Picture 1 (tube, rainbow, N blue to C red):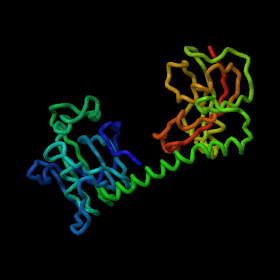
Picture 2 (cartoon, helix red, strand yellow; picture 1 turned 180 degrees about the vertical axis):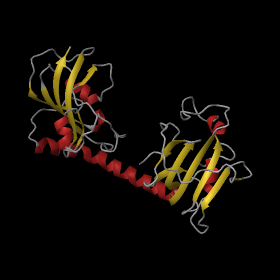
Picture 3 (cartoon, rainbow, N blue to C red; picture 1 turned 90 degrees about the vertical axis):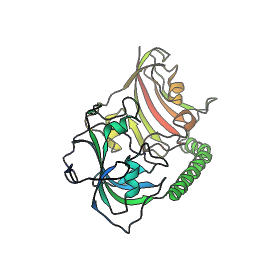
Picture 4 (cartoon, one colour; picture 1 turned 60 degrees about the vertical axis):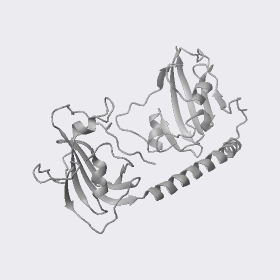
Length: 304
């Protein structure tokens, strides 16, 4: 599920705007919210507290665009049960109908009072009379009840993944003719080549080449350029080289930490890691779902 927008978005300049905001043609609600509707669909569905809004948004601090998804509608706001203050964006959201296009103008200082240090965007200066502009096209609404059902379905799916995980690991072990026994934690360490160099230990600096996969073979990350290109995961500008870190000083997933400990430089190993020793019920990014067991093909390049 995608996250709702916050102000911790890096500011960027965007040349595409719905329309230039004329400061003189905004109307004002009794609570002080400045607004302008550029398209009104009066018989369109209106949101209620708890609903998710789907549409296009440009969020600006004066002329600096903080966020835009124009051309790529997405979930942009969840209507709060309680507004932060009178005349905040929540009042504006509740005024809209599906199909509407509107601009809301809110004093940045009013928003800043409810933000933690560092949450306001770059360019904000307290007491300078700046405004935040929300330019919104509302395409659809996911109601509070629909959202609750969606969440229930997701949780049911995740519970099924949790239940199915042990069998999925055992099938992988059998399908790949793995004879190594699991450790007490459930980790499988398959040594393909035993190195002769210094052994990995806490406090030592290591360099490790890696390719991480899901059990179905999908690569989600790699330090090897050839693997990245083969999996269509190649990122222009990224430097593909062994991962260097000090053992114990950088937070690696538990299965990786356990698997490499004591392995000598020059070793080539494969780890089969239960989700409990990886990303567990949280998952990671778009590729690693909750309760995903992982495999890593590792080459311990150096240990110092």
